[in-house]
Amino acid sequence: MSLDTTIHKASTLIEALPYLQSFRGHTFLIKMGGSAMDDPELVKKVMRDIVFLEVAGINPVVVHGGGKAISAAMAKSGLKAEFIGGFRVTTPEAIEIVEQTLSHTINPGLVEMIRHFGGKAAGVPGTDVFLGERIQAKNDSGQSVDIGRVGQAVGCQLEKMQEALDAEIVPVISPLASELGTGKPLNVNADLAAAALAKQLRATKLVYLSDVPGILSDPSDESSLIPSINPEGAKHLMADGTISGGMLPKIQSALDAIHAGVGKVHFIDGRMPHSLLLEIFTQSGIGTEITGT
Ligand SMILES: Nc1ncnc2c1ncn2[C@@H]1O[C@H](COP(=O)(O)OP(=O)(O)O)[C@@H](O)[C@H]1O
Ligand SMILES: CC(=O)N[C@@H](CCC(=O)OP(=O)(O)O)C(=O)O
Figure (cartoon, protein in one colour):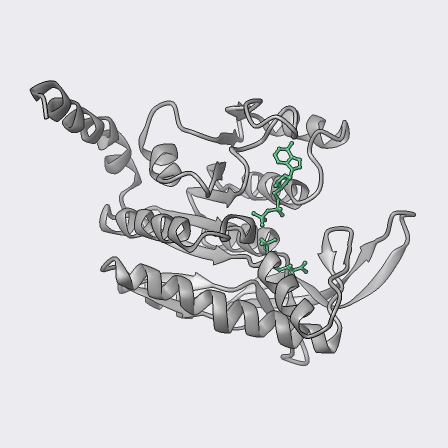
């Protein structure tokens, strides 16, 4: 290896120095999307980056999704996945599969990966964190329809998570809520759950890892990345249909989180090795950032 290459490695670390200094002790909420979880080797790389953040003195908190895995598990049980307004229609049979997939399969898998890289992690079922209320969805005709055991977080119980953070343990949380009044589980869209928690924790950053490079000005062209956008610009892209499908709840909840004081929201590619570190510790970043100003 040439001397130049060796020196270049040190400059990468030096570029990270101001970020390492300013983020020490800050909380970052990382939402790991189900779309970016197809390849376990890539997921492992993300979890290793999360261990790096923790060692660097940042408090990462992980909320994961798992939409694809839930649909696959439902299909195995002979149930058809149906979405209305972006939310899964969740019958009493489906909620069992949702809970099993999220809290008993995906969640322990991520915890195990973090531990594998020498990090400390605790799996926390969303039902221990989020208090929820049932919601209805709007169908294509704009009518409100019952979609079963689907909810939104209306409160967060932070004790278990705070204990974990104080002990430098990364909490890994599934997107479920405990229904106010009954205590029964509700299925919560993971983007909305992540933003609700980021607000409660007063996180410095909310990072969405998905299967696209970031927000695209042309969703069919991965090279049309928008590196930075403000809330007004994002609202414009939602209104003109550039942002659609699974990106809608991310942007809506991102804007809500920024309004509530979360510093920055990032959208990055979970399929790209080290996208998390590159976004956080380099000047140019790698995905899209939304800032309040
Ligand atoms: N303007 C846009 N830029 C990027 N992605 C978009 C855009 N509009 C729609 N999308 C879609 O949003 C998807 C990500 O959302 P989703 O599938 O719910 O992922 P996750 O499982 O990570 O939550 C992308 O795969 C893409 O198809
Ligand atoms: C109500 C609702 O739709 N909940 C989602 C929860 C998982 C999720 O949001 O996962 P992704 O982040 O991978 O999309 C679902 O059942 O698919």
